[in-house]
Amino acid sequence: MRLEDAQPKAGSRRRRRRVGRGIAAGQGATCGFGMRGQKARSGRPTRPGFEGGQLPLYRRIPKLKHFPIVNQKVFTVLNVARLAELPAGSEVTMASLMDSGIITSNDGPLKILGNGELNIALTVKAAAFTQGAKSKIEAAGGTCEIVA
Picture 1 (tube, rainbow, N blue to C red):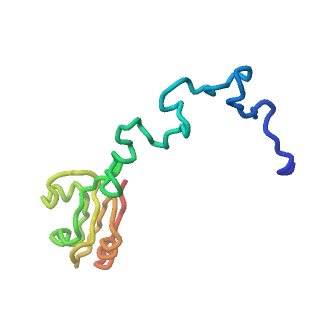
Picture 2: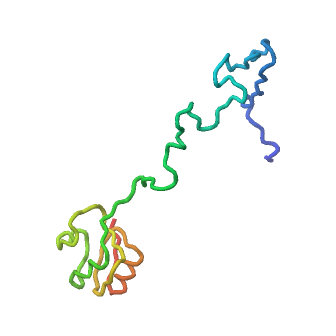
Picture 3: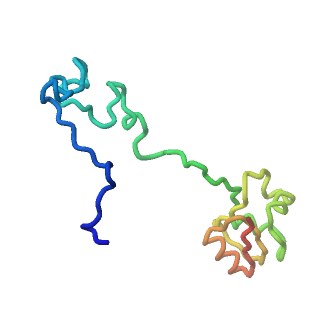
């Protein structure tokens, strides 16, 4: 089959309506637009988005910034500097941080951020790590485990 052999299905193409050719043609005089009103005028179609004079949607919505993120992931965040308070070689989880009082409320999965310094080796289990946090934990001799 070639491109020039492609044909539309039989009956799918209809001839265009010839309006304003007399009453015998069925669309004479008013051409199917009725007698009066905005939709009967010459240059008839209103522009896309026109809402009859009401402030249209494209002008009602805010422009560019500050749209809320739909289904935004919310994390309990913690900086690497706070992990330095823990004893060396300990396992860091959400439960252990709650027990030690470093975190007071569970706002979602744990995410470790890279602000601060860390000099002790820790096994950190969290849902997410920033690149800086991961490199600082591993540079101190610790390990990072991503927990679902």
